[in-house]
Image (cartoon, rainbow, N blue to C red; front, side, top):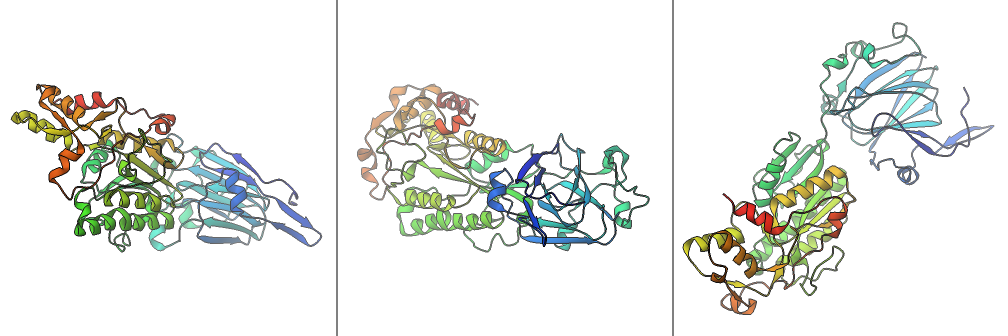
Length: 470
């Protein structure tokens, strides 16, 4: 069978999600033919994932009827025929509603197919001296082979009409012994790793993912992001995403000599370590930013506003944001005035109200609270919806308030008088704290971008009321 020359490069979707068949542009004359088997720029433009292949394998098959599979390897594959023809069969072995879906096609050297991780691959040669080639995005190893999933070529429930009957084909004994579909354990999705899992946001992420057994949680003892070697023993090929909830957040302590070193180690060097891992292993990196990257001179801050931090903490968060921006797959979640498990402003005010203390609270800094379960839900939404990568402001919505106004709300919800909160200027409040960091006057973040993705943050006052309710 001759190859069709001068076709345009084209992509065809198949019934298996993520499996794409490509017609390749093959050019030939009396000397033979030439094709661009893998052309990143053109194929990515057609919708092929930029899957970053690292190894090229070739399977040479001497006789027609040679049949191999059905194997689902723990990596993505871009498959083509170098010479000859094949009948290919692909079976979705991934956990989910399309488990068991089958797609078959006859391929010659003018075609190629992209097979994502967890989809079983098999082929039968239709001509002698057929070479079948693979580009894969992980390195083969004996350990990796132990993570293959298989289904039997002869399983009648798959409905594969092999051109050459399997009783007449050349198969390995191992392939003949693979399990039937009903006995196959579905391939689970790649895992998510949450770092800083014992902090305020980490605890909210534990709650948000409590029913998802594909999420791992590490505290600092498990993986210290400031250690450049800490990630070397991790099997990153099993992960799709790192959610970094680890951060240095002591705004005033960051102004001290030791605090400055710790802030830069965690918020910048640690992020650089994670960014390198994310780039090397093609992972999505989610990192948490802060309103402190701005000087607070605008009433509200859009995502694209240039950095203008006032203090060391804000400088380290801005530097961390710049590092994360070079990761191709990243979400920077910029937030403000965070409230969650553990010590925070709302609990401090509630305790003062319970003790009958009338506190002085700053009344010339303005923003919105952000509850950690809102941040966790926004992260889930962005990952699940596969929203465009980039920076997203995430706070709760509604009225922009001063710290004193929020404190008065807390007092009222505690059964106390709002007037028990005395509003004072920042200058007055921090006059007895000479080493206090400068704070942005206006910290409210614009929420249009996250809302445009279909995520609608709850009203601050509603979240505060629920948070204060036993």
